[in-house]
Every structure is written in C-alpha cells, then in structure tokens.
Amino acid sequence: MDGGRMSRAHAGLLLASGVQGGNARAPGYETLVIGLLVIAMALATVWIVRYLRRRNRRPQPVSDQWQALAVMGELCPTGWQAQITVYGWGAPVPPDAPPSRVPLIELEWKQFEEESGRITVARRVWAPTIGQALQTMVEDRRTDLTLEQIEQAAAEQDDLWWSE
Figure 1: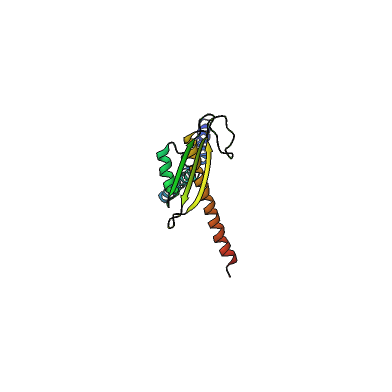
Figure 2: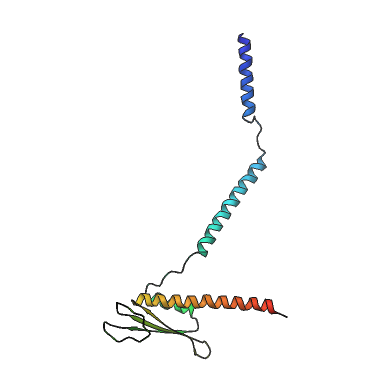
C-alpha cells in the first residue's frame, strides 16, 4: 500500500510540474526583442507626452512693462508704439469708453510698416489697470497674428484649388 501512495504522489508531482510550464526556457533573442519593444514604447510615450504639453502650452501673461516691450518687439518686428492714458476719478472720458465703476486706463497702440513707416494697425484697448491694458494689447496682437496665419493658409489652399 505504501508503494501505491508513493506512485500517486509522484503522479501528482509530475502533473503539477506539467501545469506550471515545465522547464522550457525562452531563447535569449526573444527576451532581447521584448526588452527593446518595451524601451521603444516607453520612449514613444515620453515623446507623445512632451509633444502634447508643448502644443497645449499657453503663452505666459505679461507681468510688467519690460516683458510687454520684449513680447511686442517679437510680435511686431517692423516697429510699434503705445501710449497709455490714465483717467482719474471724475475725469471726462471719450464717448466710446466702456462703462466702468473704477477709473479707466486707455492704451492706444500702433504697428508700423517696415519700408514706409506707415501705420498698418492702430488699436485702442481699455482696462482697469495698466498691467491688464498691457496684457490686452499683447493678446490683441497675438490674435492678429493667428488670423494672419489663417488667412495665409486659406490663400494658399485657394491657390491649390483654383490653379489652372
């Protein structure tokens, strides 16, 4: 009887050994290929995350007049000019000024053409603070640049569509 029990124990051990996959090992090149694939996927993930972060990054707001000078210098490389007018309590404001409960800041800015020095853009913005007026001016110019790029792309597409 003890011999019968031993054979059953050996059979159970053999059965368990077969269920666990046995002693077969993967060749070394398969391990290397899998490792390289994992590294490639990790690098691709890092690249995608960096790309998405850069694409969605918003421009930093201007915090002072020096930063506004630098940013507008980049946005208007052919030259620009700005004039700030601060209206105190009770001061008469132009009729086109927006209604406000606080004294207003008016910022008029102009962009010049390179060769002739003519004014190509002239705008006026209103804000409750000088900092906000400077920020509004920068955002206004960035919007102009975006619209110029859209118009240029549309014109290029029209050239492709209507070329004869």
